[in-house]
Length: 380
Image (cartoon, rainbow, N blue to C red; front, side, top):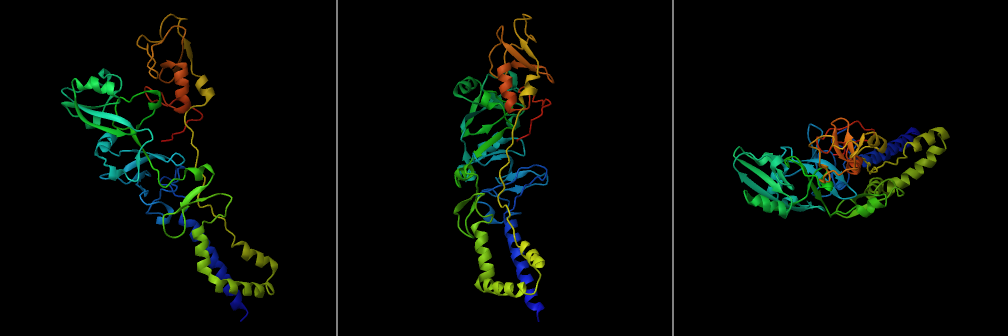
């Protein structure tokens, strides 16, 4: 009969351990691609792998066989290229490589709970009848959309009113939309030759976790129901309130009184070593919400400085006869200006322009070749 209370105590301890483990796994870190360290965090969640209390309504994601993260949109899902949780921004692309067409089909209701921004702008889509338009012959601020073009017409997009006015002379306006297209180099005024496969930037306002993340915390739903969002700071208990409530309800007051009596009973008959071993197994401090990963882009300063420089005026001629304009700032080269070239492709730029570019991007602005770099990471 002495073994019965001891067995009951061990079963009770096992129940506590199992309950804590279940709570920890309830909202454990999840990623669609196990080879990339990009965990899906609140308010996003994956319904096939997590419970509804791990995310916010309207922020459900899914995974495909290629390890890509998908955002549900009709008729086809969009591919998630990156998420900035502190900025509450998400970048998506089209699996069919025609994101401008998808933007034309979006309605306000389909975008909810997302919106464009914060860098949305007006874009004018135009249809140019006749032979295929050469992208090199288009004025500045106009790009081709090859995925929407045909054999006897070309669809283009104008980025401003001036460019739109130039194209209206020979093209018909299809639609003018506000959207937040995104591509590398747009902050430097560099326009893509083809807009077919750029990204779209979406944002969300609710739920807002910016202040929580600035305090070093992580957002999550409070309790077992409702949409109240709480901030869980690292200094607080490792378990959220919902886990604590579940633990108290699972054990109950009778279980608490029973374990006290059994503890005194066992302490008089079991060695201190076994007692410590049993209770140490019950200690658990799971980390429900890991800290976000900081990813940096671009090349380091020593690598950039290793690329050759040329001072115009020493040889009295440009590196190439056609290279008389900086592709980044679109300004013509002047005597005594310092140029820098990328060794792999031998493209030239103003030294100040390309230095700033390479600190943010590890590719050539013209040919997109990726030179050898010690700190370049693919962030999108």
